[in-house]
Length: 130
Length: 180
Image 1 (tube, rainbow over the protein chains, first blue to last red):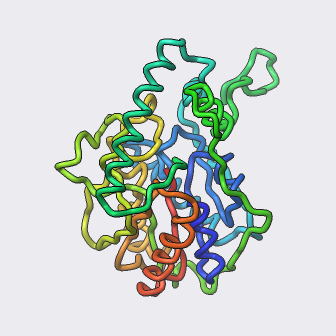
Image 2: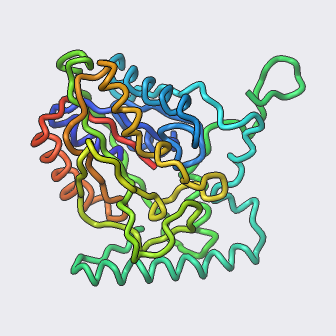
Image 3: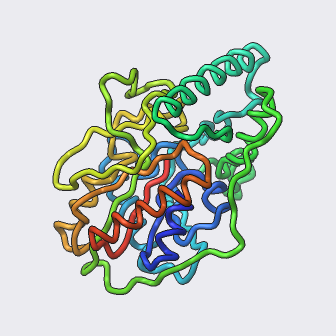
């Protein structure tokens, strides 16, 4: 999504990205970014919490209109929960057993096969990087 | 904020933004994929100032979510990763209507998120409220869906160009892009 923001901005359209992966967006280099420190998939606010969703979009618009220059990141003050232990889980091999890694290796091979078939079916060039 | 017992309000060691690049790189190395994914990065970052106040601006909404497809397997809520639900071309939808969009095809945090509430990844309802209140001038007539599964080359040369063309067609002044 950072690539899209960059392309729009290069062509005269101001953007704001709403996202949960601070390092990925900042690594690419984004014009304006509202970072919500939530599990991936909740860039627009917490589930079943319209107040959090309204707050998040309102803050994104503030970032859009007030950012002084590129690479502006604002972090939402909202918290997912108090202990923040969810942060230890995502793709963290330190938390996985050898058995779990083996299962995941097999699942990943299966997923790649499905994606490859879809692309061939759609007549598209197959890319290795995924 | 998670606090340690030092009485100084300092957060716990794990309570920082998740280092996804490091996690994902190490994860795939552990799965036996020797060539780590290379994320694109740039030394220069473009920036376009707003041309008019938001209250007079038309806002485009860009999402990575996919339209629900009944024949493409479990798409949630709570679905495992579902590559069959991916899409490969930019699509658009009428912002005056409600849509059933899902995120089973992208790398959300499946342990801590079920994606049961579309408003956590597709803020059309909230955007409508802001248009009604006059906070933004209007919502562009269409939202746009961006494919997430291709190479960076395809994203830049094909998808970005297509999205820009559609945003311009809709005469949108600004774009809100929701990553997932």
